[in-house]
Length: 433
Image (cartoon, rainbow, N blue to C red):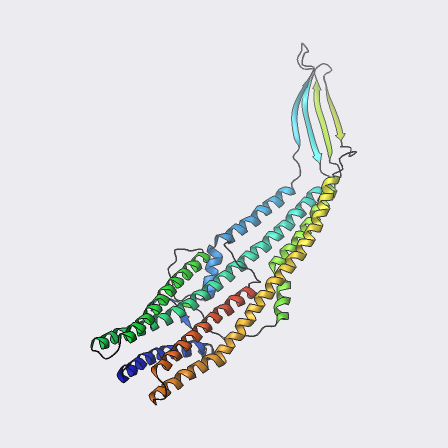
């Protein structure tokens, strides 16, 4: 390849360097300078930028799973009221000696009332009260799932958009280089092999750009679904993508999780619910008392007669022993399920914290060492070529290395924020599942 084309190719590649270095400096040091790294909504200048807190509030207001969880609490609150209502009295009319020529021998009113004993109504309310507490913890879990999913979707969208912009700029630069190389080939200044090789690189970058655009579009639609507004168009976001990760110890995360996890509290609430149900089944062994009474007028004797009766079941055979035994076993099941939940949470925490720590250390490594060194390689390669010590293939290799390194850095950022969102969200995600 002629010296002119080599200089031209290096000029084009250095143009791509400028974008890389500008984007790297702007993003990497934004947190240190206190700037907001704003990505998305390109071309929209006057539209306001949405903060993470606003997106979370929108999701909490519009996500249907939140409303469904609230209604489940209200359903149980209605049940709690009903469980405490005492039985209604019964009233009726009676007539006796209907065959008498003078009419009914006796006629009047009857009444009856069942008296609930053994505090069964209070025990039944206690059972439902514990169900309400579990439902409230489930509501808190659902809120955390929504917030976690919003944060993970936002950071995934931002990182994919960052990669898309990188591919877009590279695509433009490479296509321009290919167009000029074709013109040079027609004048006989370069070989066909050089043109075809450049064309292959241009098409590969074009494919990466197209797929990255589709990825960004899909990521926004996923975010819109989590927000409860699937038709929402992309809007500018004011979210810091690159921040200096702060180290948090295993003990700090685990202690916070054990004390505040609604998933664990719900499992503990189910134990209390099972115990209250056991108490209810024991109380059902006490028989309710039925009181009956009559007030009638005797047409023959011309007097008002009254009567009263009390009945109570004799618990000789059915003493509710089967339900009591079943409720006792339910308590043991709930206790073992609580232990199971603890183990499941700890297992998820181990995996999530490992991913968090790996991503955190990787981000720091890229920020402090890898990316600065990759930038230094670019500068040294440029200087070496200008001094005639390196060829344009060395420049291409340095460009490819930097692009690959920068994309790896973006992927690690996405992993860091995704794991951080899970830890902050008490390991809860999947609000629409």
